[in-house]
Image (tube, rainbow, N blue to C red; front, side):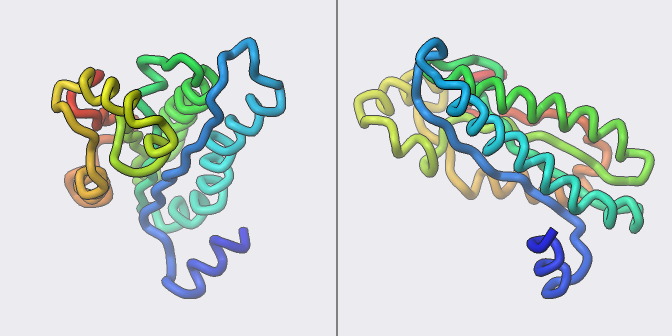
Length: 177
C-alpha cells in the first residue's frame, strides 16, 4: 500500500502494472523444505497478487489499465531442481487468467509473458557449462535480451494489446511454443 501511494503521489494514477519478479532455490523436490517451497511461492506468486490487489481498484475506477504478469518457460516445460519455481510460475498464469475474466468488463487487460532464458537474472547463477547446454537447446541458439522483453511489454501496454486479455505470450527463442 505504501509503495502504491508513493508511486501515485509522485506520478499520478497508474495505467500499467508489470509484475516482473522471480527467484528460486535449486533443489530436487524431495530435498526442499516446506519453508523453501513457501518462500518461492511467496516471492513469485504472492508478490504478484499483492501488487495487483493494490493497483486494481484504481484501474477499475478509471475503467482503464493493463496488468502484465511475468511467468516462465519453466511453468510449461519443467526443470529439474526447480519444481517449486515451475509451480509458482504456473500459478501466476492461473491467477492472471482469472483476473483477466474479472477485469475485462472494466477495460482492464491482463496478460502474461512467459519468459525463456535471458542474459540477465537467474541464468547468471548457473555455471557457464550448463548455460552453454541450455543455449544449445534453444532454437535461436542464444539468450534473449532486455530490449526484446521491453518490446513485447510496450506492445501489450499500448493499443495493440487491448484485445489480448487472458493471453500468455511465450518469449523464448523457440524453446517452447
